[in-house]
Length: 130
Image (cartoon, rainbow, N blue to C red):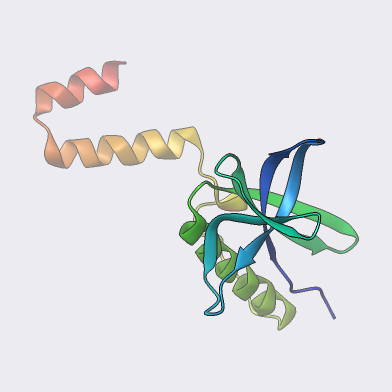
C-alpha cells in the first residue's frame, strides 16, 4: 500500500539556520498562520514559505506552495486526494502540468488570448511584438 500522507511544513529561520518546521493546526483543522513547531515549542515566524512534503517510494518530495497559509492547506488537501486516487487506481490529470507549474510559453499564450478580448488591436500588436 502506498503512502498517502502529505505534510504541511514551513521553512523558517532558526538560530541553527533555515529549517523545515511542522505547521500548527487549530482544533477545526485550519492552519494557524505563521505558527510552527520548533524543537517541540510553538513559535511565530512570519518569514519563510510553506511546503508540501510526501513520499514517493523511498524518496521524499517537497513542493513549495507559497506564503499564503490557507492556499497551502488547500493544496495539501488536493495533493492527499490525488495520492488517494492514484492508490485506488484512478487516473489523475494534472491541472497545470508538472508539479502544478505551467510553462512560460503557456502563460504568454494565455495572456495574449485575454488581451485579445480586452484590449484594442493596436495594443495587442504592440504586445505581440515584444
